[in-house]
Length: 312
Image (cartoon, rainbow, N blue to C red):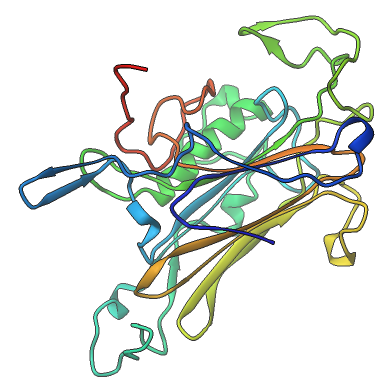
């Protein structure tokens, strides 16, 4: 399992194409668009950060999950999974946030502390055909538009009031690099293009651009004042990771923190397979509104103020 300091945005890509198809390669980059940095300015004693939760030090975590195909779309939902958008957002119960005589000084919380979750399992399982507040009629049965609007809905549940604007969550993004060039699914420069012969893109055949199975371990206490949660799954739709992950793809993101101390630490694991040789995993600080990282949909995220660079 790969451990990454909590103040960096990891970009994990496994690409085992060609003669190295069955060899696992892990690449770690800093992604400019998803960089979890704090752009700050000082005004007297006031500290302003562009990031909603600078340093990931807030006990009440806000983290979400999204999955894309090669076209930066959904295409088709995985069976029984709903739209590939999910969130784990919670606050430490307010009545336990202040130290009193009943607080355990070592961990900063009472024995009966609880996490107030903002997103239900039913919210995370929402998929095409299932309405939710704010969903536009045209998106109800369109997998691509439904996912976009589901992200906005989850963002509204997770939103934290702040200045100059509210923020929503860190974003775990998973992407399938398979591309069925005969499908005609991916646009080029915003325009639909006809199918073309296979080339350098991997695809095992019809259905190679599918969305993954997703398991959500909702954040909870695991003892000693530590909170832990995570997402994991596989792209092999007929597989059960409970039976082991030999020969199949696998992804996992786990987060952990002690109440009142330090920062959230994220652990990442990404494994490809013969059918899915090119997978990408990001941890992103997207914009709280507007486009992020070149994606053509309105996003929700962590950056209250987008960094501007006047010169390159």
